Image 1 (cartoon, rainbow, N blue to C red):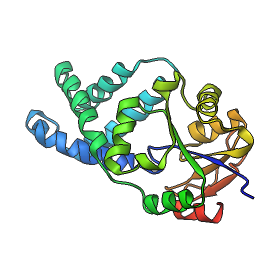
Image 2: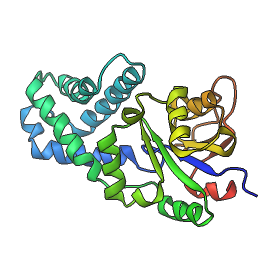
Image 3: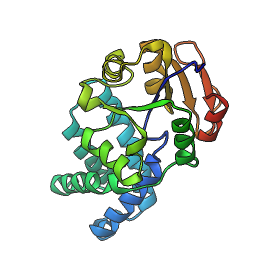
Image 4: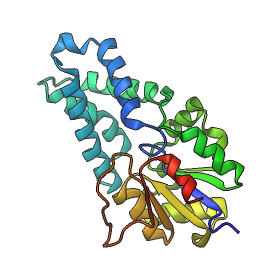
Length: 236
């Protein structure tokens, strides 16, 4: 008899390779908008700075300090400002184009399709809980061929809450009919996915793609830690 029935996945950085996909999108934007000609002389530095700004702004968004629109524009504005380019119109255009282009990217982490097929064949019910935007996340699933695997897709926008808050998990339980006892969360971020699952009273799997040393959250290790998606076969 299966211990779990409902498997809740995170999307970005867990199965959909956000960093690789965002880099490819920014390369295309960099060339499309001729950013080198206006002073962004080093793409690698621009991309590195963008990742830092994006993460800090997402942290502020998760805490309710900023809205979606500010996040979308400001990450571009600050990245341009690092090169002494104060062009709000360009930052807004970049933010809009980025969100148009990014969801069409299809780079997944190794073994994603194989593990989703494996879990589906074993009759687990697969769902997503993501802090991403509704339209954007559904587009990522569509273009990457992942839509068919997930029975429910719970976004921060659709649930009016964010991981690690308990409320987004309560919304997911209500939407799927799952109970905490038969559920487990699979995600890459200790402070978001794993802490959120702890807050919701469910077991957790930390997908440690970057092979960091095992870390605790709230004084506890995650229920499981894996270093590749293939290792999920050893749990389910």
